[in-house]
Structures are given as structure tokens and as C-alpha cells.
Amino acid sequence: MIEFQNIPLFDHDIEGVEIEVVKTKPQWKILVADDEEAVHQLMRIVLRDFSFEGLSVQIFDAYSGEEAKQFLKNNPDVAVVFLDIVMETSHTGLDIIHFIRKEQKNSIVQIVLQTGQTGIPPEFELITQYSVNEFLSKVELSSRKLFTTVTTLLRSYSLSFSVNQLNKKLEKELNERKLFEQALKNAQNELEKRVNERTKELILANYKMAMEIEERNRAEKALRESEERHRALFDNNPVPTIIVDKNARVVRYNLAKGKSGNRSPAIGDLMYRDYAGNHDIDMYSELMDCIKSGVVKEFPARRYDDSFLHIRISPFFEGAIITAIDITDSKRAEEQIHTLTQELIKAQESERQRIARDLHDKVAQDLASLTISCKTIFDHETDVSDELRKKVERFSTTLKNSISAVRELSYNLRPPNLDQLGLVQTIYRFCEDFSESNRIKVKFHSAGVNDLELDFDTEINLYRIVQEGLNNVRKHAKAENATIRFTAAYPNIILRIEDDGAGFDVKRRLGEALSEKRMGIRNMRERVYLLKGKFRIHSHESEGTKVIVEIPYMENKIKKKIKLSWN
Image (cartoon, rainbow, N blue to C red; front, side):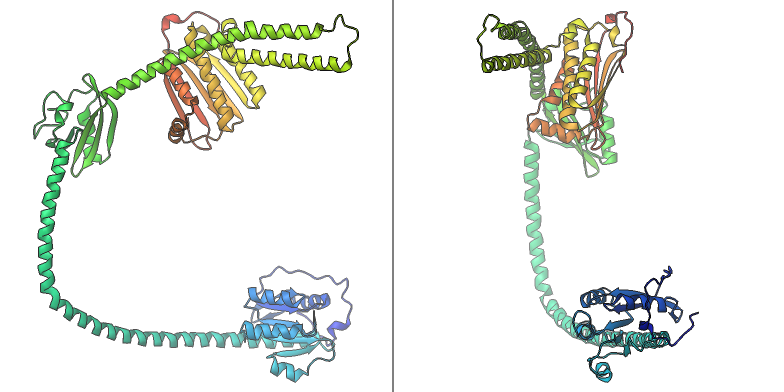
């Protein structure tokens, strides 16, 4: 407990007083608005153990009128405000009182005016005119006086708050009663209105009924006409269409039916058993699964005898509707395009070899001869200016750079290591060069591939797939690491290209690549198909990308070699 002494609070030097900070959870908010730091510290010292009705106090500081106003805006539940009349101006405290009582319309917060100045309005005038609850002089203020004042003001605030809550509750109940009375009156008016409206409705009932009967007759006529139009469209649809019931028996078919079978179906035929059953898979099971699950099934290129059909089975009421579009011509055109693309790739590789030889044997040699000529151009000249020598040196440097560029271009067009070192070592060296020049760490693993005797087409296409795959990683993946796995697992050669990059939506990216005429992935796929292999891409956003290539090989092409592996 604090021992009360009638000692003037503001007559003591508080410098050096150590204030103990007690971590409590105060309930009563007290704002001290004063421009003297000593006042704030004394308030905290005197009131730090103070409590009222079992609740402690929390003191907040404001050193100017604007700070006090801002705090009061954000904290409307302040119980007591200690105001210094004179802060920025001689009437700052009075301005804050006006802000509380007039602008915020807060009548329950307890306001204490305190000052050590002279020339202020009389105490009675301040209390009555400005709705001040207490007036304290800093000169005469003691700890007992402060405790008594805070206790009295908190009691007054508590009572005012309770009365205010009761008034609000009473006002709410009165408003609810008024609303109830008004709602009752509105209900009576609404009842009278509905009686009048119902009377009018009964008068018009017979007329409306007659109009509805006439409208129904028109609707039935329109429905019959619509069914006739639908039947005409269905029967004359160029796409063979058959409707079956829940047991897969034919209930309706159109005039194009003959395009999907050797005979026309008959009503009651069991679909894909009695009719159109010559498929390479059990289409009857697929049809029944569609009827039971309600899920659309689509078969984009299903072989039927010597033709190709695009078959779609869709749920239709309790049964299903089947369409079969003959895509034989487009399928053959697609195969022709595929064949032409493969021939183009072969021609491209052949042309690359020719250009690579020309670059290496002709252009590079000619540039090398020019470089030697530049170095020896002044061998028998004594009177040559430094400027001319520097110019020739620059020419020589440019020629050297050109030779390097031509050799690199020739290497990319036709890597000579394929003939000298073999496919595995060539890919390994390409991965090393790629890592050094692109700051992407590439790991290369191989197993069993050196035991295979591969023809040139297979080797160059596998090399190009790796080359294109890593170029895609560099351009699009934003990856830090990539892994090439090259293994032979009978009956396939398996090539995996993986990265830890951004990944992508495969279906959307392939569509964009086609519309934007990007050829990277398409070239890789065509090279795989050229080797009669399989090509797959697995990728998700933020999860990297994995390209898997499987190339078939014949067992009798294996030759005995020591297995090599580079990491």
C-alpha cells in the first residue's frame, strides 16, 4: 500500500527517480495531456499501484493538443482526462474540452483541468461553462488529493457509464416498441391491400384461365413443330448418330448410319454387339460405363476396319448418344505431314553436315590464312607507323574471333565428337560446356549405352534432343540444376531430361507453342517419332519439368564394351 503524505507533488526534483514498470492489464484508461514530462512521470509514480473496484489504471501520454485529440478519436472509452490548460497556446486545454464535449459529444468522460499558470479564468467559470469535472492546481496538488480526485472521478465515470448504458437500453426498447407499432400498422394496411388485390385477381381468374388454355394450345403446336424440325436435323445430320437406352439397345439413328457399319442398325440392336462391333477394343464395355457413370467418353482416332473414326459417347437421359465421324482422310493427311516432317529433319541434318564441312574446310581455313598474313604483313617493312601496326593487330584479333565463331558454329551444326568419341562422351562434353557457359549445373548419368551399336541417324537425333532440351531449360525454366539420365534397358533406350525450374502447364504450353509457332518441343517430338519412340512431358508450375524419351533398339545390335558412367 502507498502511504499518503500531504507533500506538494510538483515541488520535488524527480530527475533520477527510477520508475518500476509493472506488467499488468489495466482497465481504467487515463489520459494525461501536458507538455511537461515531469507531470507524466509523477502521474505514473503516484498511480502505479492504484486500483478502483478491483481494476487497475492504464495511463496514456499526450504532449500536445493534437496528440490528445488523435488519441481521443482512437480511444472513446477513456475514463479520465488530465488537461494542462496552457500547452501550445494559452487555450489548448479549453480547445480539447470543446473537442470532447461538442465534437465527440462525450459527456461521461471525466475532465480535470490542472495548471500552474496565473491569469486563467476562475475555477467556478471553468467548471460550469466548459463542463469540467475537477480543477487542480499543480502548486497545491498532493498525492492524497490526486488519489481522492481519481477515485471520485472514476466512481462518477462508472455511474455515468452505467446510466448512459441504461439510457441507451431504454431508448432501444422505445425504438423497438415504435417499430413494432409501425410494423403492426403496416401489416394492417398490407392485409387490406391484399384483400383488394385478391378481389381483383378473382375477377380476372376466368379470363386468365382462358388465356392460359389458349397459350398452352399454341405451345403444344410449337412443340410439335420443334420436334419435327429436330427430327429433320437429326435425320439429315451428316455425322452418323445413334441413340441407345440404358441397356445399350438402339432406339433411334439418323440417315448417316451406313457410314459406320456394313449394314444399317435396327431398332432394338445391342450396340457394339449386334451392330458396329468390329473394333480393336471392347466398345460395348466403354458404352455401358458411360451410361452408368454419366461421364463423356471420347476416342479421337479409333480404327474401324480400314477406316479411322472419331467416336464420342455422351450421357443422354437414361441412355447415351453416340457420334462417329470418319476422319480417315485427315488421319492419312496427318501421317503424310508426319512423314514429310521426318524427311525434313533428315534433310536438315544432311544440310547441316554439308555446311559444317564447308565452314571447317573452307571458311575457317581461309580465315586462318588471313590471320597468318596479318601477322607477317610487316616482316620486310621497316618504316611502319605504330597506328598502322595497331590497326593490323585489330584486324588480326577480329579474324581470330571470327575463326572461333565459325568453328563453334560448325561444331553446333555437326559435332565432330560423335565420330571420334561416340554419343555418350559427346553428350557428356556438351553438358560440361553448357554448364560453364550458362551457369546451370548439369549432371550427366549413363548406364549401358556404350554397349549399343547405334546408327548415325539415332545418334544425331538423340544428341539433338539433349541439345534442344537443355536450350529450353536455359530459355524458359529459370532453373539452377538439370539432370540428364541416359540408360539402356531392353528393349528401349531411355533418355530423361529433368530440371528444378519454374515448370508449366503442359497442355496450355503446347497449345501456345503451336499458335506462336515455337518449334522446340515439336522438333524434339518429331525426332523421337522419327526413331519410332515415345515422347512424354511431365511438369507442374513451381515443380520443375521432366522430359522422358523411349527409343526401341534391337537386341542383336548390342556389342560387348566396358560400361562407362560420368557424374
